[in-house]
Length: 326
Image (cartoon, rainbow, N blue to C red; front, side, top):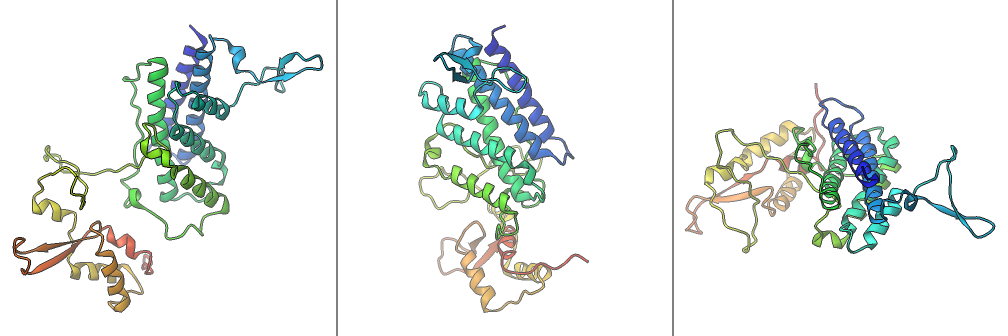
């Protein structure tokens, strides 16, 4: 078996191990183990591609040093074995090769994955937001990996379940966003800032590969076989879709009074005062949080009623003190 094929298959085994550990129901080292094993999977895949492109010569992986007589000899580690090029070096070289298929977004994603791995020791107080960010990087990393593994080695990966189980059964996981990052250790704040910078790369918008991918999960009733996911938008170019009013209102179940009562139960310092109404009116401008229903849509003078999405509560969490659990 060629060395490149052997390395590629070993890489797949590392990726499968990363997925299996991440998807365990109760595994407290989930993100750390995934980042460690997925980085290893990438390193093996990159080395396999490098060897493939260099006529299966393992020596092409070695780092060399120049001797006193001008000859070059491999650098060695403590046990005397040759030191091979690192994964970042190989990824950068393949990114420079326009024919390799490895795009800038994929390279940036790999840097993010490595940074997560290197900072794993600082994940002392993990929360849902940090878990969400790692899942987004990990999901994109896995998708990029699959694309290149198939393209480079024509591997048959259909027999494997290459997916990450989203943790969105936790309430608010997919939209959780801290009001401030000040409570994180400095190391984690720097990690999150670094990931932000990678995701802000303008090349990401035009790329086939990705720096990060956000997971969105929707639970629907089993008998509703015709359910179609959609996004509320004012974009006139968006494709049309017919939605029954009762289906739409399922996503906006709260009237004003129900919203206010929920806020009173939720917070210690809530008052229906001018400050609350100012904040409410600001949020109502976004159709993510509120919509207006007219009794007679064709008549602009007909009575109207506003309905609210339950996710608006998370926006109020940023401004009020939640009641302590008894």
